[in-house]
Length: 191
Image 1: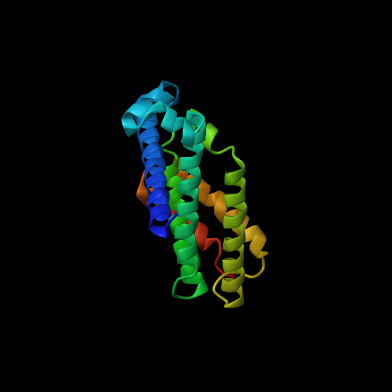
Image 2: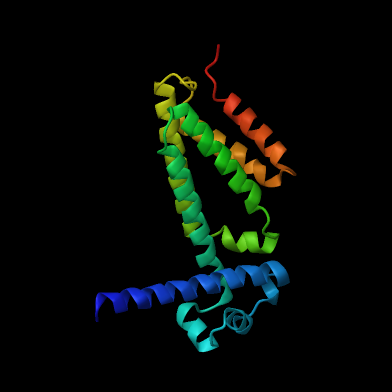
């Protein structure tokens, strides 16, 4: 097949897949997890059920694919901040701030949806990946004298990520900013 034809087919498949993901998430937000069926998703997306089943076997697999796409996007966003301009301390603060706001927005899922989305291997892989690059950024900042060096970077990364996970339960953006400030203050070199 000509290259253009292959690219067009792949582009079409990606477009259908994205439409299915977005329609499903919108339906779950509107009707709840148990109120969404494959028939309803196909109808909302404007495709036949048979076509939908070629992409996904069930509603759960659609939601997991959507969540994996979200996590990949978040990791990409955080990696861009980590690798951006500025000193290690500045980049670390930007990563931690953004991570806290991701956590704050994440808790818009209901309990049932959160339980489904956060149990997969993709979540564990993403958490390990994030921990590793926060740890490495902390080590770089410690070597530059920008954060404390009396605690191992691995332990500090665990501290930061666990502390900022609490942003999910906070009522406002101002509260999230205060949490980030307290977390970053805990990274300062002891006097």
